[in-house]
Image 1 (spheres, rainbow, N blue to C red):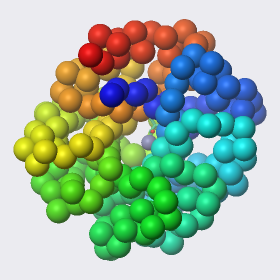
Image 2 (cartoon, rainbow, N blue to C red):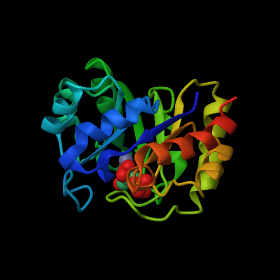
Image 3 (cartoon, protein in one colour):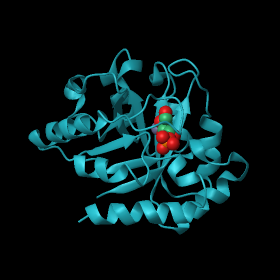
Image 4 (tube, helix red, strand yellow):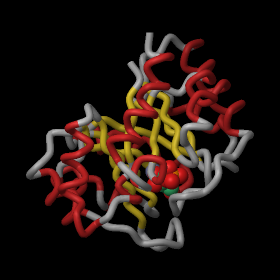
Length: 220
Ligand code: DX5
Ligand code: ZN
């Protein structure tokens, strides 16, 4: 299964609900929701009230990417706000295993993610505990950056690690994915594709159709 996960960080917050409806109408199933705390990353985005508000009107799969120091402090509140999946940064957690357990206990799927500078080997102890690995292909913290080319090899490596262990988990990639880079990450083995500016800059339906057209060639 391959899914496109539009990141609302690039949405027009003045008409966020409308834009989410447009994504639903064009067949999107996942919504990527970037929570930033101004500490783990320099920017601040939004948090629980926004998630709870859009949850009332949407049945999309809410994929919450927490760029937050010690996210364990907020797991319960993010789950209660309506998250389906909560992904945390390995670099931000003192005890990753405890955070993953708490996410599951709160009834959500758990993901783990690393910055481009963190070795993929560090994921190893957590692979059989999580439902998804997210490989950042830009520095976390803002949309509209260029895809870091060395991410492709990292996607290959993590896909291999997953397959060697016979695990059935998702491999997500986030940052700088657009019409030009999407085929590369799909070929490398990613199956959940985050896209912010490539979806929200310009006409949303046209952008999603173009990206999903390319996804369709790999989703066999
Ligand atoms: C960056 C966020 C991304 C961001 C992606 O820290 O995690 O989800 O919104 O934006 P684009 O697709 O524009 O790189
Ligand atoms: Zn993200």
